[in-house]
Length: 130
Image 1 (cartoon, rainbow, N blue to C red):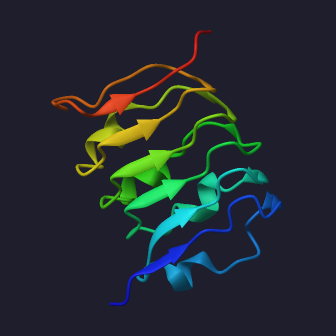
Image 2 (image 1 turned 120 degrees about the vertical axis):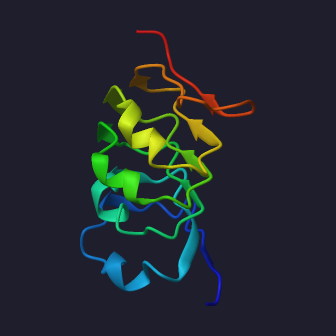
Image 3 (image 1 turned 135 degrees about the horizontal axis):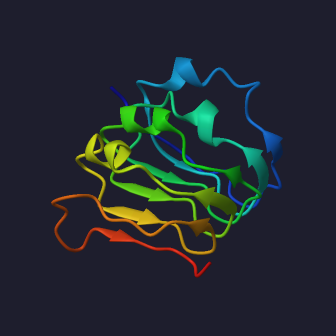
């Protein structure tokens, strides 16, 4: 499999990403950086990218929570969704299904602080004050 990296950072993408057939990319896209755009809904559509190792969706306009579908992304090592408007909590069950998750950046959101059970440093989970 060829490794693909996509980085449309600061290209002023906006809205949702439902129009893209993400499932067709699921076995070949390993890193995706959508930082600093104006995206509002990427969390559910991108959850089909089960081979992702790194996802950066920081500094967008994301709302809601982190959906259970992300538990299927078992190769994910870095998940940066900082500086959005995410809220709620991340159920421990989601995180235990992501054994390679080392860095989860949540600062700049209102997401409940948590830690993957049995995680050893440097596993980090960031949160803002409520």
